[in-house]
Length: 370
Image 1 (cartoon, rainbow, N blue to C red):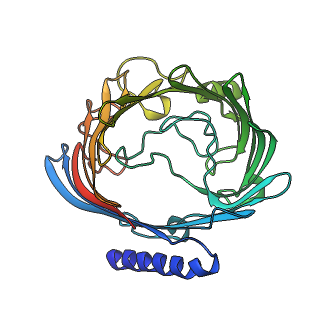
Image 2: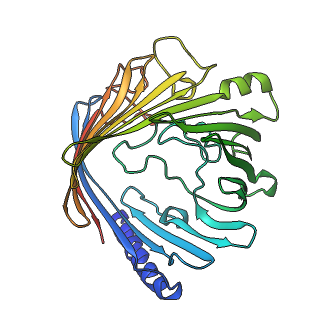
């Protein structure tokens, strides 16, 4: 039943995109298909499990001209056993350019601050958890329904305001925020604020500051707080303090090869600094190193990890991508958890439902864009 429903969703995505193309006078739709057979080892039960992860996305973008531009991205995944409208419609937005400001409305993502995995300035969605798939192209891709106004203040300066619907459907719980972006002596300075009312807690006020520059390599640092409106405000604010930082450098090698180096960290100054078992929500220090070797225009290797230094555990992934033909890639990856049972990334792990999580997984699949 689930498989039939997923097929219906995929078919619906294609039909909707093709029907919209003539209405929106858009360019040709872009279809992205992924098929990834996977073999996983669960150390808890000493068993091997095979599975197939597949997904399809259809992107329909308007022409890059005029005062109004838009994009629709429909997505269907095999892991969505009960697909919903929001899970299928990944993006659906327009951007309108008025004489003095820019309007964005629909479902999309606003990128505040800097960071591939860890970004303390991401007060709209949150970029501090480790529940990501290291082999996917974009580690953070959460989108939401929103409306924002961007007001230019110069060549490299603007102010932006945003509003999002509430999770509780109560108008008093809507999310709203604003940020100011400018440059000071080649350093990007970004500061802002968001007010959010999660469905399980009181309203939070989340100010942040983000800086980005270049010293022969790109660097960026961000800091934010989540200040509640009730309870022990001082303690909760201190425990919520996040600082993220990163370094990025691209090394050009002979024979048209290149090496990409990235290192990010996330720290909670008032988190748990003792060595031993670590809990994600209170982990005082996390690291994200990433290494990508472009051996040729068609062949690349990548190695990335999420490391918890205080308990000496890590989740690591080694992947290879081969562009065999235009738009067609063969992809292979190996993911491994290394840690003791009580560590953040244990070799033997269970979730809240007492189900074994993969200790080791191997995947060989393909990706096709047409």
